[in-house]
Structure formats: C-alpha cells, structure tokens
Image (cartoon, rainbow, N blue to C red; front, side, top):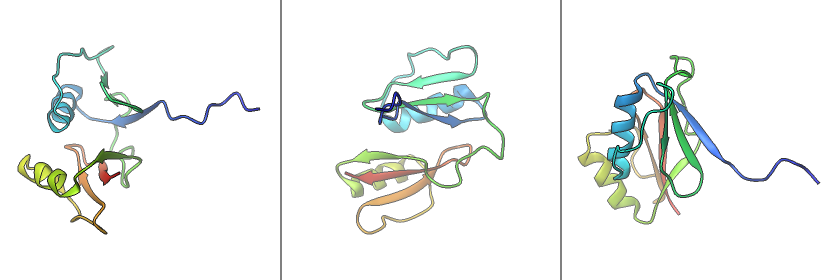
Length: 116
C-alpha cells in the first residue's frame, strides 16, 4: 500500500504580481479579496475541492502554463463563456465539443473551463 494518496491537494500557479493576480482570480471566481497574501508572495484561493495557490516567487516567463494543467468546473459552459467574455478575459478558443474552452490569465497562463 502506497503512502502517497491518490488525491491532488493544491495546484500552484506562477504569477508576476501577487496582488494583481489575487484580484483577477477572485473577480472571475466571484470571491472577495479578504484573505491575506502570505509571506509576500503566496495567495491561497478559497476553493471547493483541490486548492489553488498563486505564487509570485515561482514566476518566470519559462514557468507559465502553456497548456492547461487543470480546469475550472462549470454546469453551464455557454454561460461561463459569455461571463468570461464580459470580463474581457483573453479567450483563446471557442467552446470546443460543447464542453470546454481555454483562456489566459494576465500573466499568460493557459487555463480551461470545462462542463462537468
């Protein structure tokens, strides 16, 4: 039996400016920015399920996600797409196969929303 659990605890996203990234992610997720930036470079996004930590210490142009490492869930992919469009998020695909689309955060990390 392995001591490693078959669970994903947290995904770290490299960001160049922790305050700007905190505000952007909280805005698109409909969260408040009341949580504190920790140690000057970490922000733990309050999530349901697997966690997300924004980390400005990890950032370099070589460290950004050029392909999605995970996806955000949605129950309504069309509503999610229109919502991101209304937020002027850089959408880099249309809704594919009726289930997902890709977009970029302000640092160029490629992320995905998927209907689950």
